[in-house]
Length: 146
Image (cartoon, rainbow, N blue to C red; front, side, top):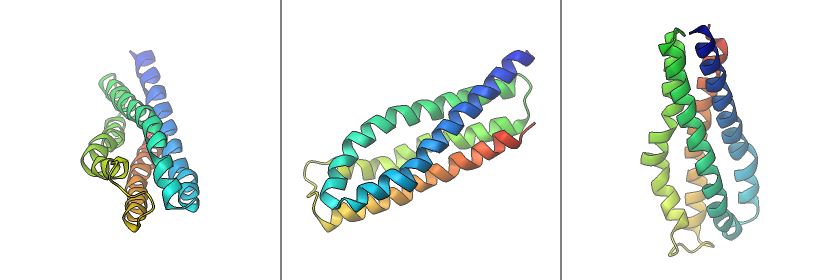
């Protein structure tokens, strides 16, 4: 049972670390660079970037949550479960709060040169920072948990 717990803890930490790293990269590097290119280019680049990142990040969050639950069920402290729930919370946050903004940014009716497009992109960056923060907190919990 101990080997399963240790494997689950490793998988949880790996998934969370990869998720947090990718989320931070998006907030500190990719999105600011996208915005520097001008609104039209930023809005155009958003679609392909979003499609690629969505699959990876959703998979990491879901796997990290499942592994944290396995770790907790096999004897890890409740902090592993709490951190997993925190990491997993990015999924409903994304679906309920960020997805409506994504849909607006991806809408064919959006003028990609407009002030509205720039506002949506800016707002999206702030919302995405919440995902970064949640995953960083979860990762710290995993790294400090017994």
